[in-house]
Each structure stands twice: as C-alpha cells, then as structure tokens.
Length: 252
Image (tube, rainbow, N blue to C red):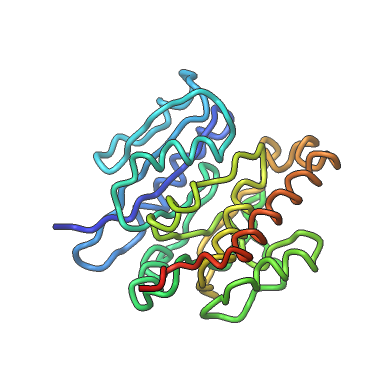
C-alpha cells in the first residue's frame, strides 16, 4: 500500500490563476518508492472563478466552503487528509525541486521531530528572487526556540510558516490552523514549537510570491489594533501549551 503526503492549499478567486504554477512545482517533486502526494485545494468561498484553474489530475481534489479566511479553508481541507504528513502550499507559491523528499526524510528518520521547515525566497513580480537573513542552523529546532526568537525580533519568526511540513496526528491534536483573519500560520508554528521539536533544511524549499493582491500586502494586515490582538493570542496559546507541558510525541 502506498503512503501519502497531503498537500493543503487554501485559495480564493484573486489567486486562482497561480494554481497552474503551484501544480507544476508539485509535479517536479520526486519521492521515494512507495510514496505519492494528494493535493487538496480548498476554496475560501463558493465562486465560479477558481474551478477553471484546478488541474485535471486524479491526485488533485477541489472543494469549496463558505468564506472564513485561509486558516478556516485549510482546516476544512484537513478533514479530508488521508495521509501521514501534511505539507502547506499557498496557492500563489511554488515548491522547489526536492523539497518534499527532504521534509519527508527528516521526519521519517527521527520520530521525535514533529514538523519541518526550510529556507524560503521571496519571488518578486519581475521574476527575480531575494532572501532574508536570520535562518537558524540546519537540523533540529528545539522546543521554545521559535517563540523566543519571534518575541525578541519584533514578531518575526526565524523560519517561514508557509514552508511547514507536519505530522498529521500532531496537526489534528493542535486543532489545525488558528481562527484568525491573518497570522493563522504563525500561530500554528508557535504552537508546534511549544509542543514538539522541528527541523530546518537550509536548502531553498519555497518561492514565496510577492504580488499586489496578496492578503499580507493589504493595509488591513498591518492595522495596529488587529495586529496586536493576533500576536497576543498566538503567543498566549503557545505559552499555555508550554506551561501545560503537553509534548509530542507523548510519553509512553
């Protein structure tokens, strides 16, 4: 029986035309014998604008739901995740060759690792890419280190939440993504780091598209009142999880 990596993508109408490039990046992934991927695309809404951009491939499943933001869409898709691992892929981003195999190897080799991340590059509108400093050392990421770094660096995490590769049972235990209008993936990253060890691959694993229509580029994303509330609850959740000392994997 083949084993699966589930790719979860939230999409809304403005970003639907990028799905073709995300799909191409998935098709360029090579996995070990016995493994394959299943792409769950969940529209954040019920428009007629997304379906025409969904690839015709048996490995791709498309669903819709009432709008609630990307975190809600991803969590709805998680209900249909039938594999051992979940990989995040935003509709407007692209995986680089080898990403899935590296993520998989890290978690298959060490049961104490609950999640993996990798280096990301910004993909600019002119097609060029740019990185940013501050990547952690390659290898294990110990519990609590992401939260500490995030807090002391003006709420900037040392790893990119859009690169997450997660054990499905751990993701389910944490309830999926946070119920926030934005930063829901950062909230998940902090919760993961509060409860389990992670892994960082120094190779570039994601091209993170920068374009005028992306949600993080809108003025509402930086509204001071909302931003403060998002950061406050994301931190409080992670610290409470750490205080309760709930760990993955659970002790026998």
